[in-house]
Length: 93
Image (cartoon, helix red, strand yellow):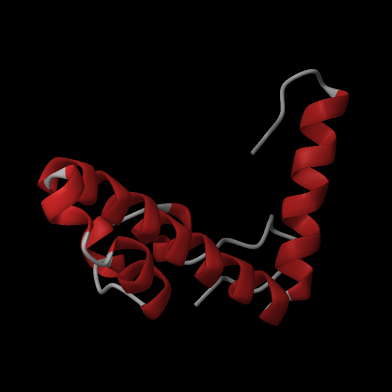
């Protein structure tokens, strides 16, 4: 769970949101299965492993998006951090 907003500081995201752990997103979904069906024989296992990592990162990004939708104060904080970074000349994303 994220830490609640307070006067003490920003809302802190849960650990899974801040850090990508490939093993946590390892289970292929239908999108990945359909995209990679039959590719191992044609393109090789290394290519498929690289695509599997890309799809794991996509699943993580989708989960983060869902989390931001469920926690609007946190989402606002994230957007403000990006805007402030651009204003300061170094994006904060």
